[in-house]
Amino acid sequence: MGANEIDGPVIELLSASVIYRKGKEEVGALRDIDFTLEPGEFVTVTGPSGAGKSTFLQLCGGILSPTAGDVRFMGVDRGKMADRDLAWLRSREIGFVFQSFNLLDYLPAEENVALPLMLAGVGEGERLERARQRLDALGLGHRRGHYPGELSGGECQRVAIARALVTDPPLLIADEPTGNLDHDSSAIVMDIFAAIHREGTAAILLVTHSPWVAGFGSRTVRIEEGRLV
Image 1: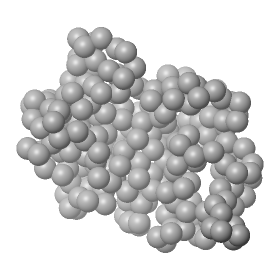
Image 2 (image 1 turned 120 degrees about the vertical axis):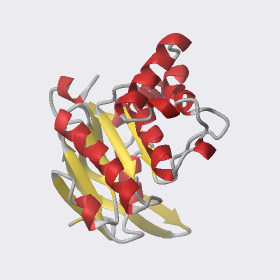
Image 3 (image 1 turned 135 degrees about the vertical axis):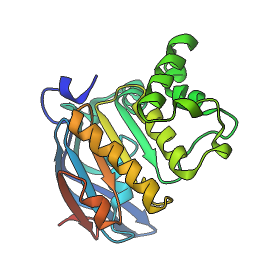
């Protein structure tokens, strides 16, 4: 399911909070967050270190549950989703891109990209074909048989983006995707995100410390001390 097939918001946070306990003390990682991400929207998230940006992404990615308030994915309340539904959501409906790439060193690029499809039970022929199509689209078809150790940082991140997109998810979540890249590689990666946004195939939620990267979004939100400001 792509973003253009969804009727209504991809994500809704309704007075959502994440509170941790340290002994007798309560620590609010996020407090009373109201946020909506529409299909095809590109939202960048900024804020100082320790402000709650990573917790916000984990909440939006279905990894954390709120301790108060509600989170809805495509109109469905997270609290009403069974474990198998949450697993399906994270593996098929959300694509994740990380600063450190998180590729498996012992698999070539095409098999890294195909991994979500393998976990979903897609046959080898189909999953490799879909992986090759994604790599071709990102200019890495000629590197599909290379291992992560044989690729540059920018190439590794493009492989990671291809992996995130291979299930055609309506939501793409990226945590500092240019954090380990030089400017030229960062520009290539951000051009890819911009193209995804233009095509409207996935909503994008991207955390960054870079004002330049934040400028690629159609909207920017800022988190400070666990609150949207």
